[in-house]
Image (tube, rainbow, N blue to C red; front, side):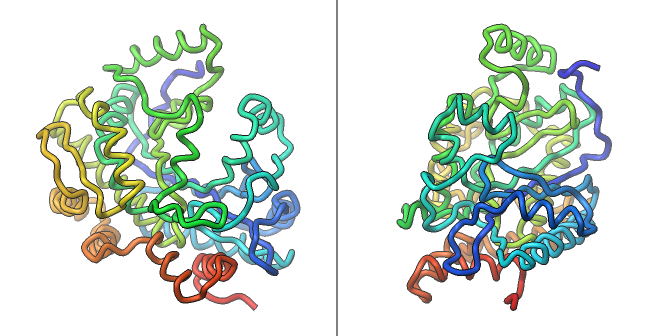
Length: 375
């Protein structure tokens, strides 16, 4: 089986990756203790996987493959608790959120793997600035052609995922004015952006072969696209989400992605259109900057509407599919937050207003992640 053979995934399955912050318990700055934390975690039974990330102040949590929101949430809670308890043994804390409120990128150290050291050589200071924290959602597809269609169609909904997960209002000790500032960091990489508008898997394999022939990429990992097919997993991977402040929200977002995929793949409501990419960067920026208050350009109707309105209308459309795959409760929680314009970014700004210091905001983030105050 070659690298570009698409491995079939049955059942429109879902899985989640979460990049998390490792904090010290004194001033709640980022700590450089990923290696020590991983050593402790390895001795603790837990489902899923826990791995290093590009700098020593990050850690990545991976779920198993799931067909229900309930089972995904239960597993994420188990992994969260195991990781949090391991952190406490080292006097560390774990937090969600798309950015740390006040760390300085120049203080970061690259985690010593060959791949991460290579990324530092290639990208220079951008590799350290990549100490931002995202949620990736994998949706299983039966074949490569389906994955290409789903990648294009989900691109229409990328602003939804940005607004629903936005949790990076602060960078380097300043309020950025954005709901999600994290994606500005991702956009600096030359291979970020979107997949080309190919029609099927064979066209994509041809494109990949050309890019590898140019020696621009070696593998699919080299594309930092907002959404990309992952042939070795048999999935489409959505990569625009900030890491939420809680595993509950992370599971809800995965349920939303799976319900959208169920609708798109069972009904095929529209053909994929290159026009999605004509308005893509505008829609993406609006969602990053304004969240639920963004304006949204629908490439199919050519109408400009409030993003909040488009999200609520989409949830109406998804109702029967949510009932069929048992995501009604998860989508109901998202609907309530959309209607009330509640977001993690707003929560963080409110915490700063109440607590008065970004150190206390980071502490509050860590308490929010575990769901209780740790001794």
